Image 1 (cartoon, one colour):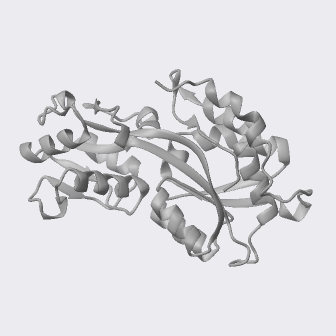
Image 2 (spheres, helix red, strand yellow):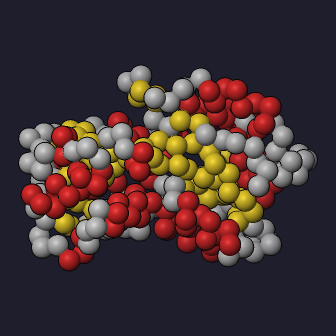
Length: 279
C-alpha cells in the first residue's frame, strides 16, 4: 500500500536542485515542447497539472503524446525540449548517447491486465504475472499487444520473456496491432481480449463493455516515469532555461502535490516519486 502522504515530506531535498542554473525566463522563452507518453495525456494528468504550472510561471507547455520509443526519437532529433517517459533502460541509453542532461525520477503508477469478464484463461486466480501470462498462452486466449515500441509494449515484451514465452511465434492468439493504448483498449473491448494497460489509462477509459481488471499487484508491474531536459550541446535551439523551470516545478513540493492530487473517482492515478536532483 503506497503512503500517499509520504511525498509531502520531500520538500527539503527537492528544493536543493543545484543542477539547474538560476535566472529569469525571458519573454521569448515562454513556450516549451514536451515529448511524453500517451498515458500521461490520455489519463488527463497533463490537462490537470499543466495549467497550474503555466499560471505560476507564464510558460506554456505543448505536449506531443506518443509511445516512448517515438518520444525518445523526437527528443534525439531535438524536436522537443523535455522528455517524460516510462522506460528506464531506454532513458539511460538516451543519456549515455549524450542527448539528455540528467534523468530525474518523477512518479510511478502500475500496469494491470484487463480482459473478458468471463476470464477464459483464469488469470484472476494466478499467483503472479508469470503464471498469468502462462495461463493466457496455455488457453490460447486472445491477447492484444500495442506493438508500437511504446513503454507499455517494451514492458509487455519483457514480461513475456520472463515467463519464458516468445509470443512472436504463437499462432493466432497473440496479435500486435501497432496502435496506441486507447485504440488497443477499444479493440480489446470489442473482441473481447486480454491486454496490458497502465492503471491511469484504464481508470480514465470509458468504453469498457465487457472488459474488467483481472490481474494487478505484482511488483514487476510497477511503472516508473522519468523526466529529462534535452541537452543543448546537442541541439542549441533547445529552450533549456524554460525546460529546466518546468522540471524544477515538477520535482518541487508544489508539482509533486499536483501529481498526487490528480484522481479519477477518488482513485490516485500517479504517485509522486521525486528525489533529489543530484546524480
